[in-house]
Image (tube, rainbow, N blue to C red):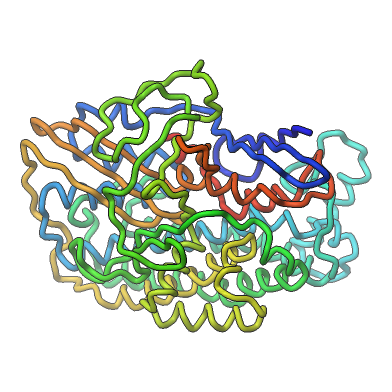
Length: 504
């Protein structure tokens, strides 16, 4: 039985998931990116200093990550000596954006896979927001309308949280999280200039200089966000985990894990990072080798050469009629291996290296209380938990980092645009490992290549017919209702796909 459960909602962009179900088990899956954009094509011939602005338009949710990766690539190409303030401000902007994105992902994109909105019908408290929500649900359920208002209804059939108070709490936090997300975005915009699409991020620093007032305002907002993370976000994730423990073993991808690490402690490629870079292959952590990354297109709608290294791509050729191709997403591979990137990869890579003591302490604490091991972080619940661990660690770091700014120090590097150069920039978007590559000839962009988190996770099969991370996580999953597949939707949402990024 073949079932198309797309377009999948509550994610960024256009993703279709095509499954084959036999005896209520998914035996095959296709992740289908349904559009083409071509950022790498129209960047050619432009001034290199346009890149950190244009690439932000790849995504309106995590534009800062693209600006940072592009800036790092240009810093590498120009051999810039970035001042400490420039590195710190980059971190403050990017870190706050991560906090916003984690809250957005859980509450607005994933929580409704588990939270029962109809529980508010039994609510008898005095909270005005919840009373309004209860009245809305009652009106919509009773109206018989075939098109009830999103995002709460309609919904897939299946089991949801059963405890009324837990549902009410989660729904209250759903509403409250909007204001907290705004605080995180405003914190990013203090130094970035605006959100989305920062105007101030630049190779070698930031055009917005630090002042005592700006630093204090930033700290005030991050303190509020951190408080919400501890008091609302983490308890809600643990409540879901407590009632759905089977999801520690559902949605496990087959392959390795890749993280580029994020938030460097000092300028330069060799600087340590708050969360360490690394590759996990066969339960062993190795140093990242960018030359080991190749992009296959056997099942992608491009007639360009397949299996090329990042710097080897010369021209991207769309081919909508290509035989066997089913997605506009390419298939990146590391030494030919499938890689999962994102929160689980980021935390596992750091945890197994013992890089960050706080990461180790938090992971050990939560694994101990849940009775799980590291392997179960590769799961639906594992991805949610690893986002929460990242949020705690990043929020604490940002407050410490903001104290390290020297308001009187320089915040921009002096640069000279070379005639010919190339550079790599790597960081972590909230969804995972992000790489930008730039090659400059005659002071113009000759080649630009982005390898983006969801390109890894939602890739189609590669030249060796290996399913991508998301496809492999779906295969083998038991579904109660093959026509709706709430289980598959929970797996998809745990990866937080961004298809606009994936097809860039």
